[in-house]
Image (cartoon, rainbow, N blue to C red):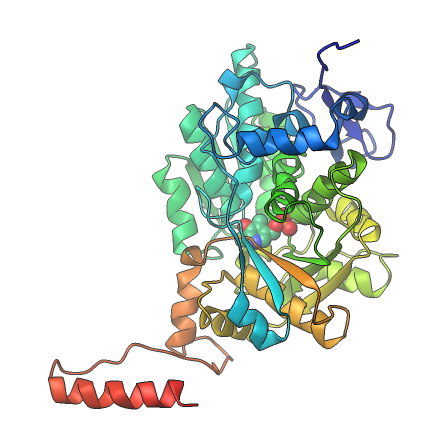
Length: 449
Ligand SMILES: *Cc1c(COP(=O)(O)O)cnc(C)c1O
């Protein structure tokens, strides 16, 4: 018996495994109102051994054989097996660098600290990993004759950038709803440049989410938010990629910032599949970092997840996680239970200082990564992360998308924050003697031992 495996995946209700839908059906929630999940036929996947999967993923990585060189599509059988390669919309996302943050790690007392730079991506955040999957599925549905007038999302900035780029690449109309004045200029210009229909609404993310739910329900536009679990399938490859990069040696800790909580769910789902298919044998622990200004998961964690109360998120520099009513909370709580999870929070002062001090060791952090760094330091202080532990911080976006807060920090313009490491440019007349004196003084000041 050497039949070629027939890989299959479908949407399934979290509460009732009997309730299933095809991935080409337009359905986001189960009859009980809860989210759906994508479930794979694990029997079929098990017909390939762990070592065969590993070498397949390895062989495909970064090569140009369409579409397998992408970090997501190199794992196509685990992600969206039913897609025609011709319908894949990919910009060879994934395979982002994972590097040893030696100097910063030494400063914080974690010698084996690694940063997974998911922001080194086409649109500058991990959102590309999920959006390539969702837009590919939409392209396939359209090619099969379905009427889908547009794909739409509410966004704190990065989802809309990814949606706009992938939809533009596929020639599919995109509509994005952004909370006015609550995203960075770089994030605003991305969907504008990519030709999306951009609405800047006088509300917050949760308010935008309400609007997009309505246009998807009433007007048939396809919903691209992470309540659409197709995105999770792409995002889960980040865990597989990290393991590939470590030669399948499992780290002790993964630390990730959380807002709508899709990404933590995805991270855990990738590890679930690797465990189930025997590619790895132990579980890492997972820590989610939240901004104190938008901390409903943290508050729930303090009560052992027995209750979950949505909050009104307050303003935070970590604008992509300024979410008070996260849609993927149930999946996230499940994930944290499976991975002996911990939730920590970070104040505004802590976030900007963590970014600034890590930037001084050569990183260039987005504020959400700053939240993760704060969470990590708190776990180390509590003794949960031990000095010899290998820790991977999931850096979710490129720092260049968030220069506004860095500039304000270094120019000492951030409200209520007195910066510890401001480094504003020095304005001097262009005269050698003046410049030289100042230069030598600064070198002495900063690098004197
Ligand atoms: C979307 C986003 C997050 C949060 O991910 P969730 O899935 O909403 O928890 C964190 N950081 C950045 C930069 C993001 O764009």
